[in-house]
Image (cartoon, rainbow, N blue to C red; front, side, top):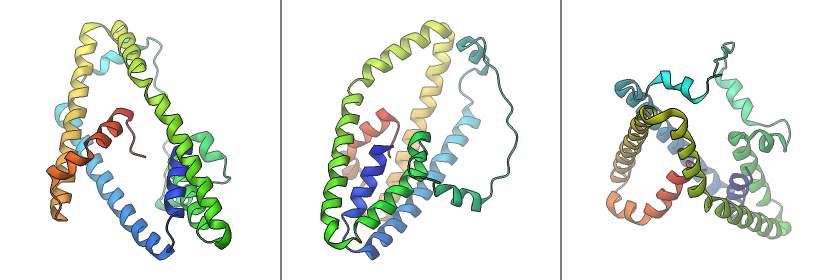
Length: 217
């Protein structure tokens, strides 16, 4: 939560012209929605076409596994939009509600650029906090290989060889989804006159980091 909040707030606070911020923000939001729709379509399509894994193995992971049928709720677009605005400033961080955290980051960033003589001090504070939480995150990321190894070893011992093969199939489908999304991005780059090969070559290290922590936030 703090990583996302301070990253967005410090970035937006760095813009001197709020009109420019709104223009870039609008394009970013439209691009985010377009890419999300493509990812959802690819994910659902691959899952239904290939049907990886064995659903029966879920009981091998946890013998006490049970499914609770939740009541169906009709959520309107208006409810979704209103849900972006948090009831208080602490709740989004406690519940890890990313949409609300992003909203707060945007509001704070815009506000920081509007307080005139105090703006520089607030910008410095936001950027300092951004660097602090990025450093903390980097420390945790260095432990991820060990955590992933222990998690995989424990899972293999639980589900056995057959279950592990089934899980490998799921991993293969996920990687195929990544590859197809890379093609989608390449098409978008070509449409905008950018060489995808050159772009991926420069962006590769960042892409690996995003894939490793399963988050582009």
